[in-house]
Every structure is written in structure tokens, then in C-alpha cells.
Length: 262
Image 1: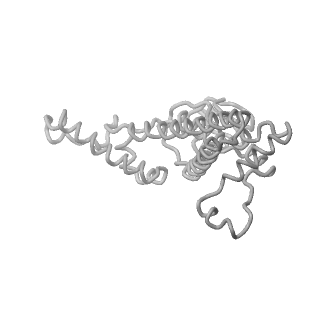
Image 2: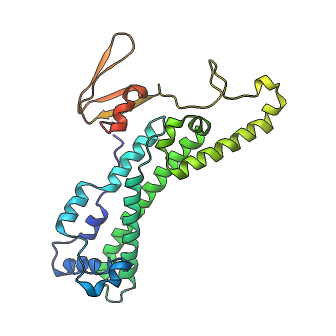
Image 3: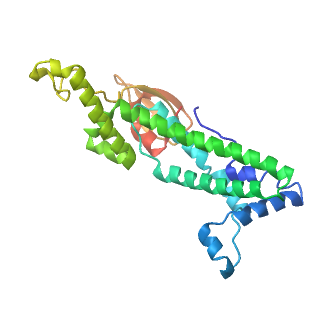
């Protein structure tokens, strides 16, 4: 199953060696002491700083790993023919965390009192940060590939616009215009007027669009009931089962997260 597992979370990497004595506690305390925003620094005199990495927060970070969730979104985007909803909140949270971790790393590396052991732990944190950056880049590129491939279809289908971010929709529109101009200058302008349109209906569509009948391999995370197959056959989408089916038969469940693309 194509379920990205990036290993320890950012918070988990920071907590490595937590049970090894006072040095580990010191490292977490030092991280907490530098992980303050500019606004908090200005208000420092008003009260003590709140620690960022408490035990409850570390446990929650392990349970709800943002990078794992984004890895699943990447697998869905790569494994399905149609463009899916843009994960705005998830990507935004991960970018904020990476920015915060970057500031903390820079502060600790510049601190002459940072020990060799702490520098080693910072390398582990940096490795996890690079994984996060790679995930974000890969997710954006997977979506960009679909947007450019189906730019004209997406721009001509208003119900798909809500699935894209503002930047993606603007890019799709500009790209569709460029492709249309290229077709006109290279081929269409030399044809009779009645053959120049690309948006005319017909047995063979002139504008590329997703093939929703494409087979996909899915793992069922929640009971989804039965789906009708060709003929009189049906398939039971039971929790824990795996199926190779047409995408349009399970599109609803994939979007809900009840079926995971493998």
C-alpha cells in the first residue's frame, strides 16, 4: 500500500534520547527557550514563556503526523486520474512548522554553548525537515502535472475550480490560453473555419480530460457498501479489503478518505 511513513515526526526527532538523563531535558528546554515569535519576544516582560514541546504535544504529534497525512494525499493525487481537492490547511500547517523549526535550528547552531551531542540531534531534525520539504514539492508537482495536462478541461468546468488553490486556477487559465494559441498558430489557422474549434462535442473529445474509468487499486478503510460491476456482479467494499476497480466507482469514497489509493 502506498502509505508514506516518514519515520519519527519533527517533534519526535527533537525528543530523541529523552530518557538518557539531564542532557536530553536540557536540549528540549533549550529548544523551547528559542522557539518564540517576534511578538512573544516583545511581550517577554509580561510573563514567562510557555514551553512548546510538552509530553502531551509530543504524543499528539506522533498520533496526528502532518507529514504522514500529506504523504497519503500525495499517494491519492498520484494514483487517481482526476484532480483532487487542494489540501490548503494541511500544507499551510506543515509550512508553518518547517519555518518555526528552521528558526530554532539557526538559533541553536549559532549558540556557542550547543554541545556536540545537541548538534547531532539537530542533524536528525534537519533530515526530517528535508523530508517535509520533499513531500510538499512532490505534492505540488503531482497536482501541477494534472493541471497542465487537463488545463483546458479544468478551466471549462466550473465545478472543478473549487478543488484548486487560487494560484493553481490562475496557472491553469494562463496555461490553457498558451496551449490554445500554440494550437492555433501551428495547426488550426491553416484549417477551414468549421474545423478550427476544439470544444465541439463528438465521439472523440478534442480537449484532454481525465479518464474516470481508469482502474485504481484501493484499500478500504471503512465499510463502503456494495458497488455495481459490469453485468449483474457486485463487489462488497468491506473494511480491510483491497480492490482493483474503476475510479469512478470509488471516487466518492476516495474523496471522503474511506478508500485509500495504493
